[in-house]
Length: 108
Image (cartoon, rainbow, N blue to C red; front, side):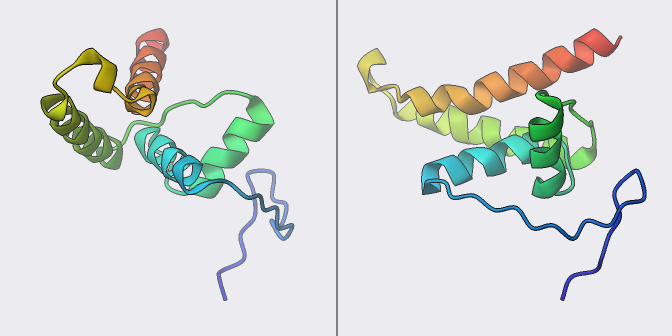
């Protein structure tokens, strides 16, 4: 059984909330929370739902995730011969990384 935790206001987190998504949506959610630097998917989803925006938290794992994602994008771009072959889902991680980088720019 997992360890019981309290939130930042010292409240127990004992309410379980679940939802269903497609495998593709699950992959996109996984990519987004890793790219945004959250340690857990739970923290990422709570931030999104409760505050309607996500603040990126820079850390070494974030850079590793971005590097990995950029390599995958590069491989996909090398594979493409024509603009008509570009899948719209290719732009999702690119948009996420741009949003993250913009949030760092706004913090300066």
